[in-house]
Image (cartoon, rainbow, N blue to C red; front, top):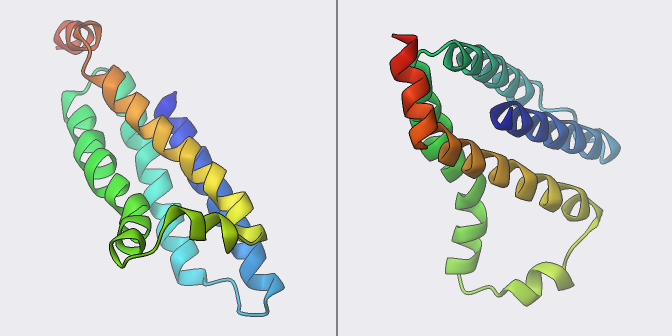
Length: 132
């Protein structure tokens, strides 16, 4: 369920960004939306395979979203901070887009971290062993 929550947060962020882009007259960035739709569809499929006890699905989610996906969410803020900016500037310069996207990103990250933790708890290991 946490993986589905992460997908839901990703979809919500995509919608917010598309609406913001359209409102600014910049176009919707169809290519990016298509890529996200493909990724979200794949995640839902792999999550259903994990629910069916497929170990490959658990590992795919852990590597694909736990590592690569998380990096894609945090690389921009980390790079921005590494460039010498401060957290105070984030809130001082915050706009409406930030007000919508930041909480969605927090939920997204929390769902991913929670899913990773629960996927590798002892009870989960027993579940996957029993599914063999």
